[in-house]
Amino acid sequence: MKMFDYKYRAKRLKDGKIVKGIAEGPNKTMVESFLNESGLKPIEINEHNSFISKLNRITVGKVIKERDLIFYLKQLSSLLKAGVKLNEASEILATQQTNKNVRRILYGIYYEVNSGQTLADSFKEYPADFPQILVSMVAVGEKTGDLKGAVSQIIYYFETQYRLKSSISSTLMMPVIYLVVGLIVAAVLTLLVMPQFESMFSAVDGVEMPGVTRFFINMGNFVKSNGILILIFAIAMIVLFKVLKKTSNKFQIFISATAIRMPILGQVVKLNNLSRIASTLSQMLNNHVPLQDCLATTYDTVGNKIYKDLIVKAQKNVNNGEFMSKVFENHYAIEVVFVRMISVGERTGELGNMLKSLSAFYDEDSEVKIERLKKAIEPILLLFIFSLITVMLLAVMLPTFSFTSQL
Image (tube, rainbow, N blue to C red):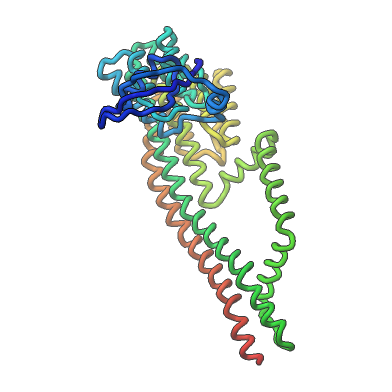
């Protein structure tokens, strides 16, 4: 949908002050609604477009963040439950949005819904911001006449996945912070403090510098002399890694397999992917989406290549009339409970319910495993930090003792 900039002059309702500004919208009426929602009474609204405003509308990648999407769906669910029609709810949500990039998308949703298009088809216009599972669930809800129920269920799914992702991120954040701080301290001591000992020892003949201090000084000198080359090499490695990850199937498999087999962190990778697979399949199957479509959508929700390949194999099994659980049997990336519950579900015709139980199991199990991860990481992290501090202290203190004793 085409968007325009409008210059406005309006009265601020809370204090009566006249304010001026620029607002974006598909037409003057929508801009007026937006200003009213913002506590402004429009006095004058005129179209105003420029080259700079067109550049400002260019966005790259995802615009609506996961947390914002959940909030949007909760608002939509509340309005629908209150009896507000879909087109009216879409207008309200668009005019209430303060982020102009998000508002632009919500205006597009409103325009398409108001033109007679389904909500699911409207979401399809923005694949980067509305995941395929959301589109599929909403489409089912619209077909069955239970859009409110479908939106409520997808909110639960997104909240569960967001909570799991946030728990994992917060668990891994502290080790990263400690590691970065430790490396910064080591770099400062190596590049700024220890070179002073070199001049001190060189001023006195016959006095030898301790080996650990000499090692750090030589390392610092090497970095200073080859800093640009090291930076170029680091950037080249990052670019090469990204290119290989995007283009090389073998490299993708290697990275994914390494992530799963890593000590401690490998369990988190398994948990994240298996939980996502179980949750996605259960949500869609219990809303009567065909299994092949469920697997196709699940493929898009996981990022690990090993699990993606397993889902492709599961699709082939389903096409051939076989149980998809056979693909997961005796595979290092799959837990036994995952295989058994899917196998029982397929044999009893209760796959959707079994996957729902499996998803609930992973929701509860995730808290235990993440807590174990924290306890496992802490001693390793402390050992690393203490070792680094001890070595750096020796490198700083030994030259003084050595210099004094040799004199």
